[in-house]
Image (cartoon, rainbow, N blue to C red; front, side, top):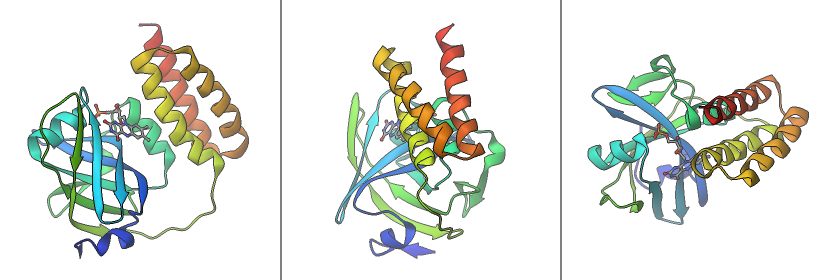
Length: 196
Ligand SMILES: Cc1cc2nc3c(=O)[nH]c(=O)nc-3n(C[C@H](O)[C@H](O)[C@H](O)COP(=O)(O)O)c2cc1C
């Protein structure tokens, strides 16, 4: 187990915005959703938008687990839907994504506001599996598309839909089967929601 600020680098949390999948829980049910952890040297904070399970759970429990993974499929899936409980394991009692390369427990004391800007503090973390890989534009763009999809669902703006169509073309060209499946599922969700 890794502790303290020195552990951040080892866990893969570097300067800038670290896109992770946050696992939180309520009444024993684990929730997962993408979340950005912003690091500026030694300071760490998150921006939470009201209206999500992640917001509610972090405000009531005052902690979350940040799961570091390069599997962009998980970003797409957890951005608009729920991951089944089979995707998680308990590590020291905490909800962790089975396939995360590393995970880290963060403390977060925040006041409820529409947009919460809250400092967070690393408590401890663990490396589960170190994998290295080449950059894949398709995988990166699946993360980008997941953001555009959440914004499209919130604002229904045509510009996000157009962005998604453009991203899809590059993902289809540069990604592998998993990335292509991720964007297909994301677009289907948008379509099915749009018709409701
Ligand atoms: C890559 C990515 C990063 C995101 N970062 C944040 C964030 O920092 N803060 C936030 O409130 N929502 C963020 N979101 C949006 C939430 O993940 C999204 O609203 C999600 O549906 C919340 O799910 P939940 O209700 O299960 O918590 C992000 C989405 C994506 C795809």
